[in-house]
Image (cartoon, rainbow, N blue to C red):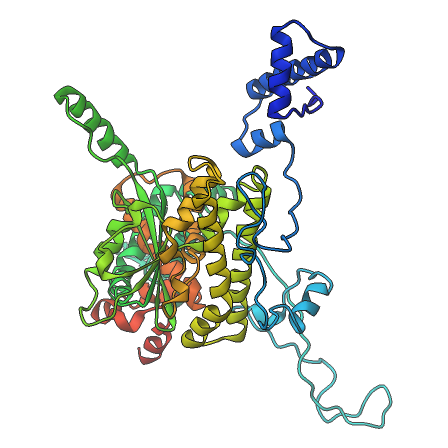
Length: 551
């Protein structure tokens, strides 16, 4: 059914049409409008019955596709509760004297042709190397083309070839057997040394762990894929092998927690998770509470992500269970050494993120505040543009800081000089909207303004505290690993399987942050299990290669 023509009526026009309808004084134009409204109504009912629509898609169906992004306002103060006169006049104005963030090579790079998608040969770090020699020529021989010069070596040319295999491959060893015709004794040939003593190698187990917790492939799906390629590995067997990887990695995971507790900056967030054993507990508890006429206990389940900056290293920690982000953060900080300064903790403003606030310096995500106004661009375009444009400049300043690789002290001074005036003007404009009653407090715009003003101190911590981050995007990106697993596998069976997932995902994500080959790392932990248990500090992702050299 084709989407009918859109009907555009202002509130006043609608009220006038209703009044004429009640007085039975409809004009020909009124009847045409009513026909369009009824046609649109029936089309909407049909669309809702016949299609599975997200709220975003339904909004696009009713109101049309989102308009292109509005250009930034020339003056940051142009806003009012109903599009009225300007406010402070400087909330969205670029401060004078700031070096441009888009000069030089950056601007030229943006104007260059798009990439072709090919990779340099240097990125294939683990590729097998094969030296190809000339079959007829050698260094020092005369040139076969001109006959005058001598051949001398150049850097080799590089050609890459990629092959494909199953995640797990199998080797069948057929051991010759000989029996004595007199005594019946059987003599069996031995396995070659490279076969190893176990059916599943450490590398095979590491591949299974990465497939499950980095790629997010469910074990039953991987079992089907392996069977398709003629190397079947049942999902229960895969789980047994993954547990063995976690058993070898547990001491390092515990050491990462201890080290992360001493970190300077902690990014904190969580996302929902399903654990079947806890869901069953919730059902039993609800039944018991109903019979006893008491309130049900808490039923929520979360995967918490904590990304911690410890000196030059970044540690990713995950925890799945009933505890929300604030409780998991509090448990981590109980391991913090008392003589250390308070850590900076970045999160959104949800109450579930709260811990012992006296023991930390809380920062709130400025990107969340900006997002609230981006969602209102269609309804309150002028007011939203003031806020989003001002915050966009602040984030541009942060990109400039990173491009220049400024120290923490230089970054603080830079933001105070260039972002400070923007944020001060923005706060004045926001307060003006509230005090002069230009915005209905209970409207979506009023609530967005109240959010910024209510958390202003924590949202602008980057202007007062050295090293304070602007946004929580770091941990939100890290949580995508867990969201990928949830979208593919939907749930964990037990709290134990959720713990194994948290442990291995933490190690894999920390390897990614450290630029370490996670496959080789998990193999090393299994191969040197005794050494890992004896000294887990020496087997952290960024130092384990030194431990390998000593063994």
